Image (tube, rainbow, N blue to C red):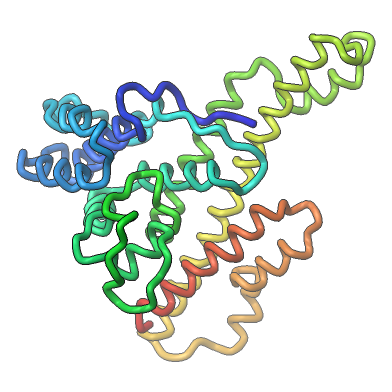
Length: 303
């Protein structure tokens, strides 16, 4: 297994990094200036999503001078809550992806999920899906005693394809930085372990090498996951763009689909299913999760 991130600091769910990330995106999106009211608004919205134990710490983070905010959210996430993950798709994997989605949010997306994260008359259908709650089947939903407050660990569904791509870029950046800290590569570890004279069986030296190799295998798995997801999301965005062009400029030529078959979502998913080396967790994420996002986006806009 491997742990992503750094020290958690005083915030139980990495809202220290989230606060800095939102401040940074506000700074860059508004030409380097932000009104005190906009900071107060975001602070109040995020306050509704967090547990009471982090309230004072987050308030202090937002009340600091805007000039102290980092210039990019990429610099703000170097010290976040650690999440131990393995080559699997379990609860910790879902927490990791949830936190990445929040950290990749721009100001508008933070406001959106904050409004969905607090409700008094019951969660909406959008909130139920976003936070992984049981869907009641009726718009507006029904009140739920267990879902009055949600946190950055609870974003169980992509916010939108653009945010999901930024989250995957962030995951790729995190895994790359983690791998760069090791003195040797995974390939070198595999070669070293073939030398039983230098690394005798059952020795502490060999066991340590095996442990480190396992950590790198996890990092490489999630790096591959991120790169594959980015490629699939780009295909989805391309399809959405083509649908938009079709709506604006008439029907596409029938030959276009055949000439660009490799740029179609269904073609790529089928190729992944036929590839014995494609890990099933990556396949299921691309097919099921990103496939659902694609259907939502196609249904959302009357292209």
